[in-house]
Image (cartoon, rainbow, N blue to C red; front, top):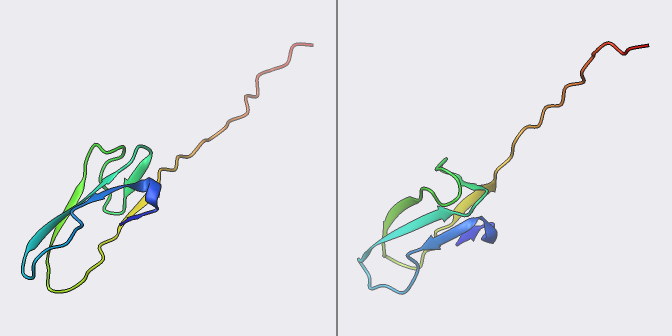
Length: 80
């Protein structure tokens, strides 16, 4: 499952036999970064494997990209 849902996609979920090794892959959506620090916009994904030995929930956490905007006041001389 993706958290938040708009943050990306997670593949690999389904119904499997006991003992099956499953690869789960999380890919961030545009303007999101995965909690593992992978690159933005689906340009890179994070994968993990798990062995099925009971019901499991795998959650991929994503964060909306944030940027800093710095504004500077110009102090040019004013002609009089």
